[in-house]
Length: 83
Image (tube, rainbow, N blue to C red; front, side, top):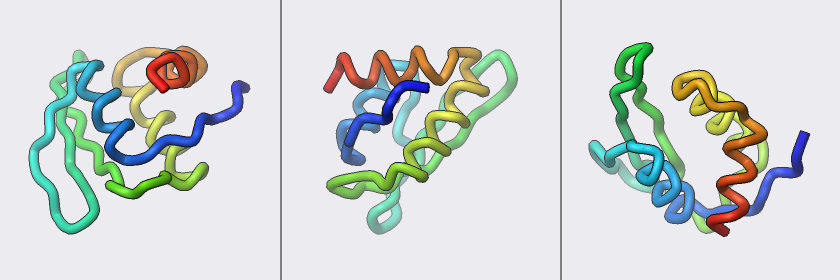
């Protein structure tokens, strides 16, 4: 598996917007995004921190890959290219 990049909440939200997600709300330091997929409505919460913890980023990317039918490796590659 590819090594996870170091990203902040702002960068990750921008990346998810490029995948079709839209910001629904923000509560404190967490931002909620939503996207309609072929599997239904996907909601995900992103911490708006300077640096997202590796475990948290891993869980977010796993969830995104399942809902969007994109491999996690491909997501990591796209995220690194945006970085």
